[in-house]
Length: 233
Image 1: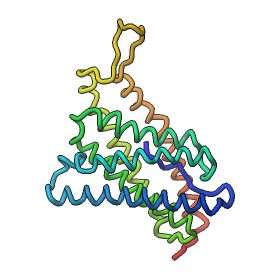
Image 2: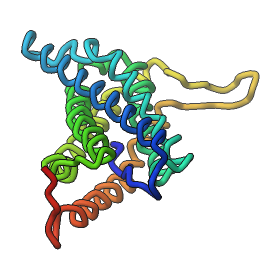
Image 3: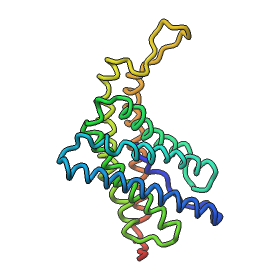
Image 4: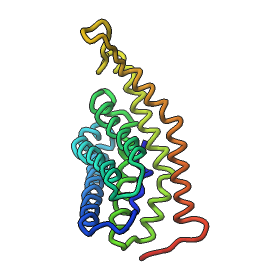
């Protein structure tokens, strides 16, 4: 699940400190994801293969995707207007995929699904953070608005496909190794099956993906459809 429902619009005029902080945050995250894209492109041009791609982008991917946890805090303290719960769900799903699946199950790191979700996330996030940055500066060019509310039509489903592909590829390895699972009997008399958790996690996409995708389509119609669009150059 991507981070698409976070709309960084203002409840009221934020303080200059809050605005400066949000601009800095978005610039850093935009640059971070751009660096991931540059590393990925360089790797592919040099090797003509996706094998080893994850190894090359692993550190910045972990750093900048984990940093998105701050977006939940932004919602909670009110400096952006968005549902803290929905933002948490979207950010957590990505962080879980990066750390709980891709990092933990080494066997999936060269799977096409990993390359697919990294590609989709990177394109989405570079545009998204650039959109927020220029919006906060009141210098938002129409092309960024159009990209923000158009690219998701392809990138969001493809990203979800990559996420599910990666998780599905991890299942047999998790089942065989018993990764993070706790079997009975034990001193605490509790059990935990990470394999079943992953299956349950995949099933959650069924109700959540259509809802989030529909939300973005609604946002697109509201922002650039119907009554026309305001172009800022």
